[in-house]
Length: 628
Image (cartoon, rainbow, N blue to C red; front, side):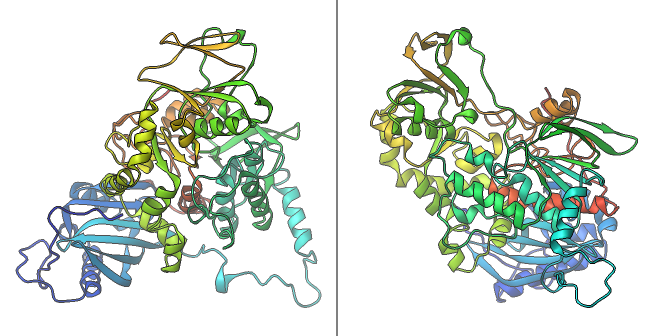
C-alpha cells in the first residue's frame, strides 16, 4: 500500500556531514547501512540534548507518531515545530537511549525504511522509520514494556508446580484461582474495572493484558456468558474482517480457523478465552451508575450482579462497550401507532419469523445490508431505504488489494507476524494515510467497475469517502457509512432487495401498516428495522456517570478531519480512545478486533504504570470537543 510518487525520490546522503546540508554525492552504501547511520546519528544528537541538530534529521514534511513512549499519550506530531515542542518538554524526563536499527532496511520508490528499537528511562520501545532524500518523513515510537514490570513470559514464566514439603501456602492452582475469583470485588477491590466483556473481545483483550501485567482487574458484563453479545445476533452474522486481521492478544486463532468467523464460533472463542486467560469476569452484571471522588482518586460504581446490588471502588474505570455508543433510535411521528414490530438493528434477532411478511429497513450500511439479506433468505419482502450515499467494497477485493499486504496467508508465509503487521499499519500517520489508500481504492474501482455500474443502475448511491480514500478512513473518521459486501449488493442490483434511495430522502411519518417517506412514497410494512447507527461512545459516560462528565470528555472517535460526520478541529489521533481523557481515571476502549488487540497494549501499559506509582505526566492532554 505504498503510495507512488510522481517524481521518484533520489535517496542521497551528505557523505558524513549534517543531513540538513547540501547533498553532493550519491550514497553507495546499502540501504541497511544508510538507515543504521541515520538512526545512530539521531540517538547521538538526542543524547547530547541537541534539539536543533536533531531537527536537521527531519524533512519539513515530517510526522512523528508516539504511542505512550515519550508522551504517556497517543499523539502525532506534524512538522518540526511540533517535534521541537515535544523534545523540549519530554527529552529530559524520558532520557531516550540505545537507538538501534533492527534487521534489514529496504529502499523502494525513494523511501528508505526499517525497524528500530530504543529505550527510555522507564521503558523499552520499538518503532519504524521512513526517510525521503535522507531525511525523516515518518517516525513511529511505541512503548512495549516497562522496565522492572515485564510480563511473565518466556524465561520469566511461572514455575507452576510447588515442589517440596512444609510449604506455607498449601493451596493448589485451582484453589488459588477460586479464592481469587471469590475475593476480587467482594473483600478486595479491583484497581481497574472494565465495563463490557465482549463484542469483539474488547474487555477480554484488555483484561488479558492487565492480568499478565499483574494489575487487579474485574470485567463486568450484563450477558449471561462471555460471547453472548455475538450469540444473540441474527443467525447469518459473520465477522466481515478476515481471520488474519482478527487475532486476539496471546492466543491467535488456530490455522484451520475460517477466514470469516461465524458469530456463534467467535462467541465460543471469547468464552474459552476468558477462562484460559484466567480473567476475573462477572457475567449477568449490569453497571447502574458511577461517580468519581476527586479527593480519594477512586470511583464508586454501583452494579447489579445477578440482581444483587454491589458497590465497587476501583481506581480506574474503563468503558469497553464497543466503538459504538448508545443506539440511535429515531422518533418518527406515528411510530406509536405501528401495528407490527419495530426495533433497532442491534436488537434484530434474525429473519426466521418474517417469512411472507413485509419488512422496511431504514439505513444502508453494514447492518442494514446484512439484515436485508437475512430477511430475504428467510422469505420476507424487503425494502431498503437509503438516505445518503454508502461506500461499498467487495470482501474478496478488500482482502486482496487492501488487507493482503499485511493480513493474509501470503503475508504469513512471507514471515510477517501479526505484531509486525499491526506496527506497520500504525506506522502510517493518519494525515498521510489517505494518500496510501487512495491508490489502493483506485485499484478497487477499476477491478470492480462492472459491479459498481450494476449497483448504480439500480439507483444505489455510492461513494469512496469525501476524499476518495475508501473504507478505513471512513471508519476512523466517522465509524459508519460503509458496507463490506458479502452478497447483499447483488440482491440489490437484481431487485431482490427493493431500494428507495435519494439525497435527503427520509421518513415523514409512520402509519399502522406502513412507512411513509418524505417524497410521498408509502411502504407497506409488518416489520421496521432502524439500522440507524450509534452515538458517540461518551453517550455511555452520560448514561452511567453524568452528562457533565460526558461533556467534559467530549466526542469519542473521529480524527477531526472536517469530512462528513467528523467535524474539526483536527487532532491526528482518534479522540479519547485508549489514552487519558479530561476526566481523571476514565478511559475508553473500543474498535474492531485488530484495534482492540493492538491498542490494548498501550492502554494496559498506561494503567500498569499508574498502578505502580510511576510518573505518567501526560504530554498534551487532548481538549474536549463537540459536547452534548
